[in-house]
Image 1 (tube, one colour):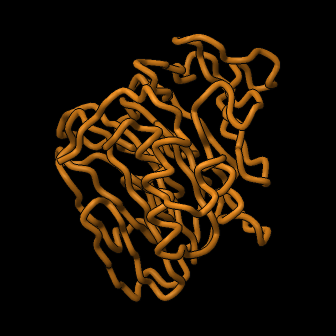
Image 2: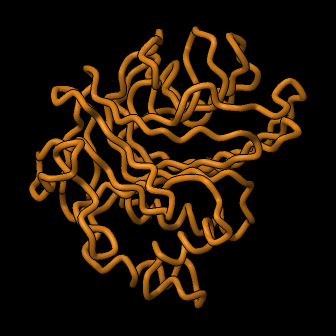
Length: 275
């Protein structure tokens, strides 16, 4: 059972227990960044907090001149915490999600009417991505986070969506669904998922239960459009715009170790307030 709760203790304290004596107690985020990107891997790490690792991470404008400081401020720029500087941005002021700080939790609220953040990050298999999100309840299709996934348009890649009242991870080549994983029913609790796509077509999904999909048609899948939050990059889609919360997300151009998957889930769980 998933339980959402406010976080009242320091993040490093909670992760000392979940991640053990691996150096995560002092700075769990920096430890993850070092683990994921120390060999010059391409990718990004997004944390929706005004201050991350002692520096401003959210700005109201794309130029990065007006910092996000208060609950309800619009977010036009989210700084990538990896060494790659692949920031997420929205040039249209009316389509910027709102930063929220509620009961000790921090997230971006997308309103379902065009809110989106785009990036320039495109990856080829093998690659991995992860996200902690909370989606508005309902049965319609809704784009959440990913790269290259459209509901009905030629676009290659993988993404997280809501469809038929459940979370799904859809993987496509051209206009064809190659492999779709249907996860748990959407409710008011956050959803945390880690997706790995190998060059040979193996998809490993850690979504609280875990599943492996093997499909040779997915060999060497390559994103045709970059990662985006809320609406697929490029603008053409037949899914609804995202209505919900983003608690944190990352991507890296390689597969992950079992320990890295566990550490990513623990860190994103803490960001989302999940026990």
